[in-house]
Image 1 (cartoon, helix red, strand yellow):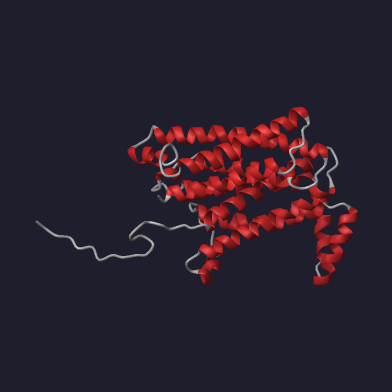
Image 2 (spheres, rainbow, N blue to C red):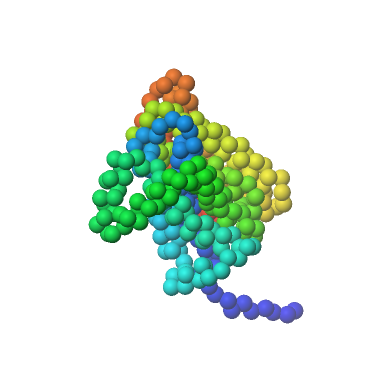
Length: 311
């Protein structure tokens, strides 16, 4: 009988397969939230009503969230000094290459959109701060250009947000060897989850009453879509091959069942949906409870999917 000796040893594979740590779910969460914030800020801009000062300033939160997410992603890289090589070419068939360029596009689009959204009083404050670093003249020219673009800039901002939100799910779904990540619905799932967390982030700040009502309605819509897509993902996995059924079992009676149902389904979806429905129908102010639950559920969803996909 022939014998085979395996001399391979890798601390990333043996004795257990473990590739991605906490950095990736944090990156996906912050990127998705930034995408949702960009989409909703664009929709608020496209409305005819006047925006509150808080809503105008919050347009600048998107590049901050993306920067924090990219820092987490950078910490995960094995060869950090070579990160610049992502930007030597655009590989059309590589989601990571697309994602790297989308992240770069986010900065000029969001900053231009944010400057164009400022009213005159806010612009004076912003220019006063930028004058200290010699960027005041550039900011004034950028604002004039952004305001000249008008609604075209808002639509470009919205489209960039959609691309960023979908990319965070496609990044996982292209790794078909992982059964839990093989669903094509991960892109839409992470997009609507990002829309929900983006709305929750905005609701933590003193936006105007009409804006708050608008954001609550969008959050409820996103939560409903998220529930439907989650069901479709689980049904798809449960009716596929043995590997996919085993992956679904991790969330339906397996290792991650308790976390998935308590943190994601109950705390992150059902409870905030109930609280926001009460607010929308009976004008009952829920303060920060519902948004914080949505944010915790959005982070838990990505953490569980990344971890379970590697189980």
